[in-house]
Length: 340
Image 1 (cartoon, rainbow, N blue to C red):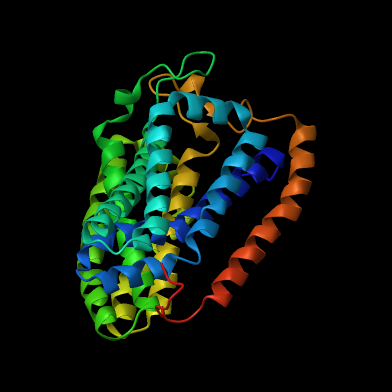
Image 2 (cartoon, one colour; image 1 turned 90 degrees about the horizontal axis):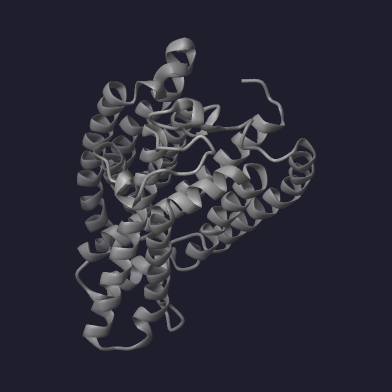
């Protein structure tokens, strides 16, 4: 993998979306777990665990989308037009989730809060599912015409393999969210959340194993690079070791280490996805020759060079903002008059 401008932008887009998956992944996971808490105080605590950071986490999605548009506009156009209905569903899921966070505690009525609880759960779970389905379709391949335009429909995207990756993503984010909540809560609520974490880990491991087998059997091109360069299997090994380390850290009450292990799992999985896709960005199935890759989908070298300068300024600002927010709002959740 030579580090020309096209490859650098492939890596940069991957890093930005990986940052989004790590940060907004636990946000979405908290929403999926939200209805498991029964009391109003517990549900408020869960929302306030992500309250100061959830909107900042989504900056990584916006930045990643902007980087994709700047570097690979043909991919941006194909994905956002071909996956239009799915993208609209994702947008609505994220909107209703955000509105639920802001509106839930504005009124004291039980029916009001329950309605927004359902919205928070539904938006979070649907958002995670759609993200996973999108990744599964990119891995499986989508029908593209010779001009690179999407030749399918919304129903084309609902194949078994992408749906399996979508379910696996929901399970991954639920586990990630449970671990984050263990880090942010204390007392009896923390113990209850640790009780959720163990089954969440088990469900994810089952989904992970099923997706791995399905990938090896049904999407073999995603493993070609590892077969060609066996040393890259270390990426998968790191992910498996991180998965194995999570229950150990949870058992010993080391929530931050468990969270780092969960983040390492996400990094490993997306690194494997990137290795399997490279140099393609949108794989065409059944006509691989029609695929969009880092060469035929890229902006001009001058644009890539100029945008890289802007990225070199902008990305550190996003990282600095993220780090500062997490530092300011570190520690356990405490409810007060200004809480959600």
